[in-house]
Length: 283
Image 1 (cartoon, rainbow, N blue to C red):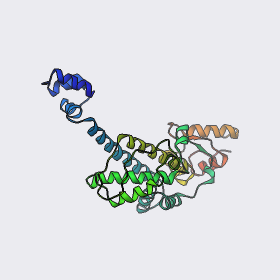
Image 2 (image 1 turned 135 degrees about the vertical axis):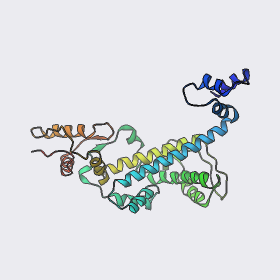
Image 3 (image 1 turned 90 degrees about the vertical axis):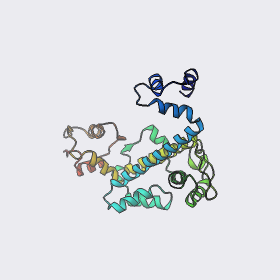
Image 4 (image 1 turned 45 degrees about the vertical axis):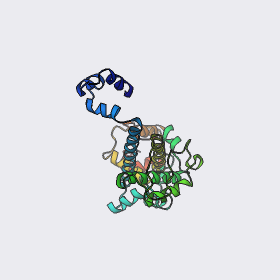
């Protein structure tokens, strides 16, 4: 697009914004003035840095929302939910505290849900604290960009010192380490690369998938089912079926919209569903 617009303007240097819109962005809602600014007045390096900032900011916001939704499913007070959400964004002691606040695991849920291949491959329980150290570093970078004129703070230096000890493919469990610039002192310029931020989104995905698998055996998984099915699931006729048929029918009915992990219900899990009035009782 940059090459096309540049070529067009080299032939018609006095082309109006309207002409640019009709030629390159008809129906998109983008004005010709915006096209000229984006592709001619800004160089590619400036654009990629801007895009990297947007991706970093939005991806962190999405992860913060994800942890807040996990906490929302608990029966705790609002302040406690906020603490759980924040603790899930920190490694080691604080993450373990969040796990304890969300637990204990329910034995009835053990082995009842199975993640798809994508989530299974991304889930990294043995690397989770190292992944969170990477997250903390990039989040402090986000904070510096948003609140400190893209200059490093002590929090960023501290986060980098934690991250640099594990910034290798073995400790992160990844094929590559997100591209980043070391931050060793205060007031260093914050530099972002699009490659680094894309790598960071893979780190986030691994954290999310790890939590998704881990918490499928916690009470919040039942809370999620109760929220999805406030009224008993209709259309289940279980009285005369064998146990195997009942379990298959329950698994099929649980995921009516295709958004839940694949279920392989056990009789203990089915009893829990009946107790919570998610499925009807049967003889």
